[in-house]
Length: 176
Image 1 (cartoon, rainbow, N blue to C red):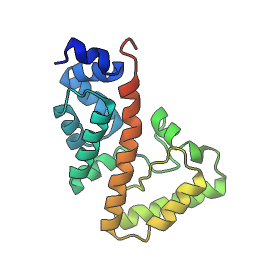
Image 2: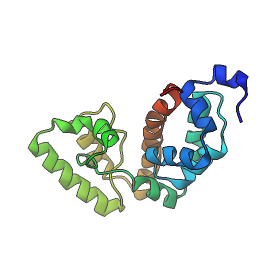
Image 3: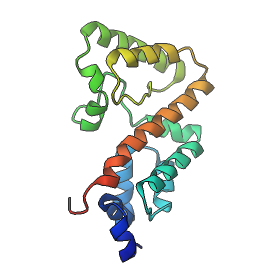
């Protein structure tokens, strides 16, 4: 699938991803995003010469997700302030809530429930680098959106999350 030329120019992790058997590659992608359609699009685009090529394919896949595909992807994300136990990715991404006051955590729980009731899914935001207060403020702002507006914001946020999550797969050393 890859030539000796591409293995010298393709980052180690990306070269490894390009040559993974489909079930292993699908499993790796599913750990990053729960959307079957997104993973399928990334799998059919292999091999990738560069990380930018993979990111572009991810962006294109996000743009093509149906409402049902977005719902499937969102189902893999825990509510802000309540990362999945034993999930280091969720905990790392939601680090801004780790030191939040009990008052802020309680407010986020209340706002999350209100958001879920309004939109039928978890509040999704690319939380990497955000403080608890920034996440709360974004939630407060977005709760007034229409479902169509929110769906497009969720699509954008999910795309940002997927890019962050894909980066280590691209950069990881082939010997790792």
